[in-house]
Structure formats: structure tokens, C-alpha cells
Length: 188
Image (cartoon, rainbow, N blue to C red; front, top):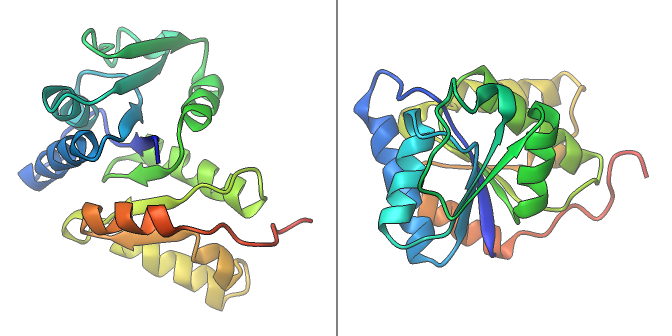
């Protein structure tokens, strides 16, 4: 695994555990020699994960849309910063640069990015692992809802299983190295 895309927030959240998790993830990626691809901002948990990876000597690639480069305050010290025209191109560029996806706790933007790569995996558009870093049970409700979609017949169990979930990011990264995409995408 060469690079992992991390979806996370432009804010820090209310508990210090979120910033601590972002910092630990950035450091761990660098220690494992895995590059970080993320939203390119210097603020929130985005800034925390990037700063930690950089401080540990890691490669950090940011991708930020023009409209957000001043609002989210584009990070000036990255290995690479790609400024793209819009959010669609941001997500496509981050996906193209990455071998897997992790979601730290975040808001609607984090979920939107997560749901798009999850849908792409379901449709067979990529075969990359997707993980939820379940910091302090943050994603428990989402995991329960995904299970509910299965029991109600709107999501196949195999597609639910595309989401790897763990509070231990080291364990998630270990699972990434063993990941095998589903043999049959939904619409093939």
C-alpha cells in the first residue's frame, strides 16, 4: 500500500480524542511508509493528520478545490498540493492517488466522500479497501444503520462488508494489506 486517502473534518470536534486520533494516524502512516492523501487544508483534523505525517517524515498530498483554498486555508507545507476546480474533481483526484480510504470522525463532507467511494466500490469502479476509524464509538450509529439497510433489503451483506470498522487504526491498516475486493460488482 503506497498511499491512503483520509477523509476527515475541517474542524476539530468537541472532544480532544478526535485531534489525538488524527495525529496518531498521520504519524502511523509516515512510520509505515504510507503516503497521506487528504483534503489539503491546514485546519481541523485535516491539519492535524497532515502536520503529524509531515513531522514524522511522511509524504503528504493535499487536494483542495479553488473555492475552498482560502476558506479551509490550504496547507502551505505539503509534499504536493493540487488545487482543482471543484469538489467532483477533488474526490476523483484523491481516489486516483490512493490505494485505500480511511474516514476519521467528521461532518457531512466526510460522510459524502465516504459514501461516494463506498458506492464506487459496490459498483466495481474500484477494488480498494475502505475503513472507518471508530474513535470513541463515533461511527457506531452509522454501522448500525448500514446493518439496518441490510436487514431491510436495501443493501447486500457483502456490500455492507466493504466497510471495515475498527477503533484501532493499526489493525485497520493491517486489514488493508489483506483486503480482497468482492469478485462480483453489483451490476455486472
